[in-house]
Length: 378
Image (cartoon, rainbow, N blue to C red):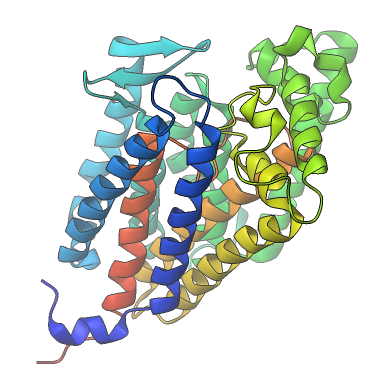
């Protein structure tokens, strides 16, 4: 249980940055759904409900000393695999993918919670292997450990979230003491192999374990005009996003005044491409301000990790930081056309119940480590 002395450790900058991001996100969502009949505040109301549910989940996480999670990491790992596998048996299919479980009152997306569960279980796994991550053979088991949930997510198919698990793995391995040179070699080799596989696929017809639309999304960054598909292709999304951000200029065209969002030229402008609404209606300066809030959030996470009382706590926070950093990089990158369109939402900003709840639970882990960074002696 939390005691009064624990609250002296609270990182107010961290809490403030989270609150500011949520406040701005609700304002932007109210603009993104302004032309939605009959209720222009539909997304805002739903998102606010999930924020409140997420806050309840966050405080529940705070009540449990994070060290107690070590006792349940085997059960959590198995539960994670069962939840991901259940999608194929009782899952709800939409937009060409089977990623959700219909619970009646909302669609549960197990892959969102798989990220947080993977962070907890991998932190336990790596904590037991401190000082034993310096050789090639030492890294095999951590990669296999993450590969099982990753393959289940990739099968749904959900390429974006499966790549998030890789980002979590590399970030936590680095903090856990793995040889940085080996991590760079593995990452570089993986990128090179992926590039060669894509070349062989398009040049010689080599089969790949990806859907056609996923392949188009990966290569559309080279030339979005090759995948317009009459307004439905990934190229069209990128083109409209670039138009939206470019038309915003320095200070934006004004709240609820963006033609790309308000006239529905910009697809998914309340979820994957919500940063495009920021660029169009709020402009470059305020968009940089939003990114500045994320910078403060990530910086405070790294600071909390550095001051954690043990390696397990540092691993937990570094896993959450890796998740958020990858999401921000890819989401902002795909809206500006410099990263592939992978359907990764902007954390705490994009509309989505499962995403918001999973993010709040992850932030609860960070605050848990922050509040308990000093050992209580009496």
